[in-house]
Length: 216
Image (cartoon, rainbow, N blue to C red; front, top):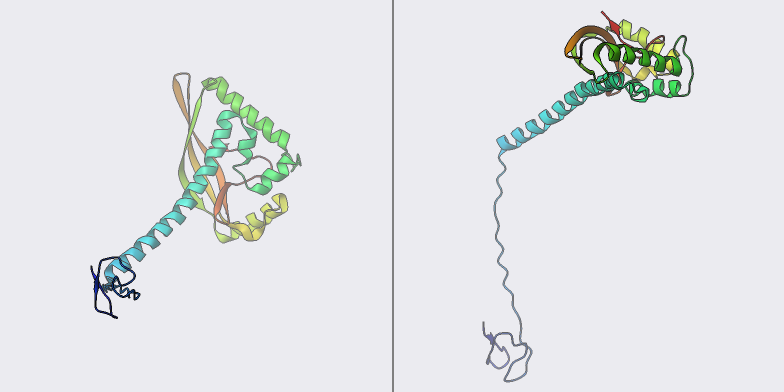
């Protein structure tokens, strides 16, 4: 676009900064068009979006709670299948892991005794089902403890394992189907375990005389 000199009125070529006739500096005008777009917020869409976010958060909390228990049980049974005492202890609260790893004794229970018991169970299953046997489990039933039983459990857990009472939220009794496969056949068991929730995490409940399941 040609530029007009305000001083002498001469027409100058596009891009000129000074008038080609009188040498006067040319003014540069830039026209900026502002386009205003009205943004309409759809309230129904907003409420739907909020509801979806809340639902995702709730599902996440529920999922963490459920799978937290499942993860601890997986460590427990996987350790029995592989005869791995370190993995086995990780299924229990950290206080239990710490005290046992320090080789302290609790009645009939010690690190060595827990390791010996694990060896015994592993060898029994291996002799019955072969070295490459497989262990599978499924929770069959859960029984949530009432408050008075949880209160008693809090005393025991603190006195035995130094687990803070305020951290204990829930305790449940579990009935679990356990399946062993090997040597061309499978065998089913129904076993009993307890689990407790510390804060937002689930662990296998530590007993003072044995950390292992009971067969019903």
